[in-house]
Image 1: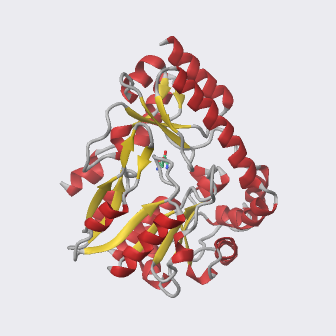
Image 2 (image 1 turned 90 degrees about the vertical axis):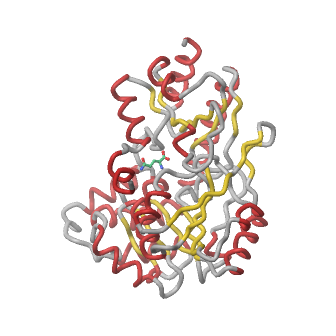
Length: 367
Ligand code: GLN
């Protein structure tokens, strides 16, 4: 059944984007920006074409590993460049897990985590986050601790968290790290939305537990170019060779000219205040969408990070919204595999233009 599961199901993100295109729907489903990437990134890519067109080393172009090392506060030698964060997560699962092992994660859960763990021959075990209509999404460290067994090898976390928008507090992170140390667990920290937060800056887990944390990141999310497929792994010091052996088999290297462009763009993004601008723009669009959805009777849970919000509405399903209202969103059930999804839950991407958000709201009002 592993074979069926991996091969037979179309990704919910691909499916909703396909339906949106077929129906002419506003696409607030899959998380990609509708604006073009920043000019400094595109200019760097134009400059790299014709100069960096052959294979990069499997670990990544040295310039990009160095730029990532400086950006993340790690040694560039501990960085592996991948084809997007999706490949990064898959490689870490393959490197850390095998038959008989368990990986603990929270649910709602991003769609690839469980199948990737299964492809490594291991078992993913989820612990529910609960949705309290008044207080929003709740994380329970005690429930996570109670799910650890002698077979647990890794904790797979995501902060800021897709789809709930949760950013773990320093107190919660300290509890997670203590748990990992007590049971000698690896920590896999999916931090693709590390620069997309609206309150306190998320603390990277690697700064609290450098000896056991694999950080996964994404140039696509950071620099608004999700189709470029440039992601990375920052491994604990000295452990990169264990990832690299696998990395050469899966795709050998990520696109070399795009790596060169990302290497040039990362320090520019920092120096030019690009991420601050992004956060400001997204905070406004989040409020615009949240206010509109509330007027339509939805309960809206504002995220502390990511460019998604979650909403509850008794009569909304992703299927009817795309077919009847012409608005594509992600069904809450897409993030549930082992627990029951809250009824009426949908996820809305606001990395879109004001005009698209307004059009979506107009259509919803009319439907
Ligand atoms: N991270 C994106 C989202 O949650 C989707 C990623 C993908 O489609 N592979 O919408």
